[in-house]
Image 1: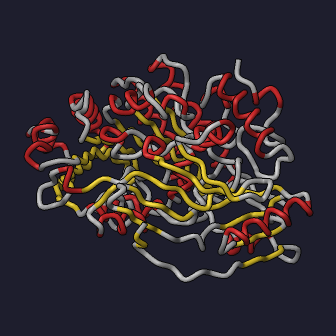
Image 2 (image 1 turned 180 degrees about the vertical axis):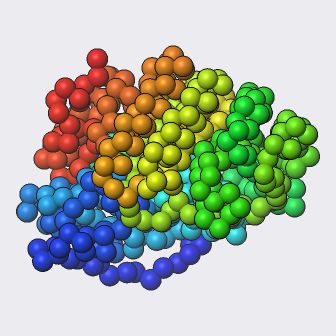
Image 3 (image 1 turned 90 degrees about the vertical axis):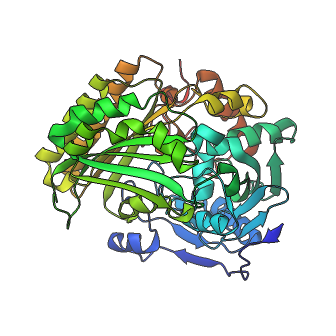
Length: 483
């Protein structure tokens, strides 16, 4: 591979936390949320595979559990006095091989860095919609993305993983692996946490020219509405369905940010991205040009944006710290009742709790045909990604500053998920990227898949060196096996 961004070999950083007070924890471990984080036993920042091996050896000698951090957005991973926290921020290599159509990404690379690098090389790949999220972490948890209608989820574009195991071995696994390595590869594609330390992943890339973009830019339209216009917005959103592969519509409930004309007021944002020619985009999103809809909006912007800036609109959400939680539901259908009920619940809780004004609800849609097709063929049918026929993704983000508000927000989030899933009528499903703290495993995988994860853990990490969201002390026995 040709090195797109060569990096000098970094040196490892190690720090014990015996004298670290709780207030200083955030300075040592920077995460998107302060939930489930307390003083760890040790923090290490490895700079090489050998450093990772040394850290694993240390954890085993001290009977510590390793929690691996990339972008620091996994709020479901607890950090406490039994934790050796491994920060992968020094693994920053990005190696592009245009001829092979792949990129190899270090375990600490964030989405924003990779997005910029690939754009500069005339390439793209399915990535998270947050610049601050770790690429490898997103990949291990399924990887919902705005290109899902064209290329499926991030796991559908995984080529191989390089990881360090609990036995202190460095191994490579891919779709051609056999035996237990094949099982490990498939689990890393969607249920990847807790099997080892992934130091790099190789992912498929695609030429931007293949999208036939106008002026090599992505067509977007963003419309902001006051809450009384909700019925108009819902009607327009539903009229976009079913969406063609290149179209990615999104509804967002948010309080208008400070410095805007409606600061603090509830708004509904309807936005679309189209990964194709602008002329096709305007046809696919023609309902968004209706006069009555535009008259109801307080702001309308159609823009052509560079691919490297695809995620910039959500940059304010990337700030670390505070009490934040995210949960999600993958849905097979949506209707007006589901959307209006979710909005009413969001409006009520943010009216009640002033410190929760930054809480959000996203409803994203895409054409699931490619996702489903990949799940019916190798290696997709073996990957740990289910419900591939569902083209809607609901994400509820709770954000506040007090514990009392957090408790109310978590109940509200559960209520929104319950209402939407009841309307959908399908078996509840989410992906690990958006699972809650101790998310019921039956809402992620089938019982058969859960048992496979148990067997995999016994095979690759029988002593429980790595923290896992699927097995071990984190789970009570009755939670581990789905009916």
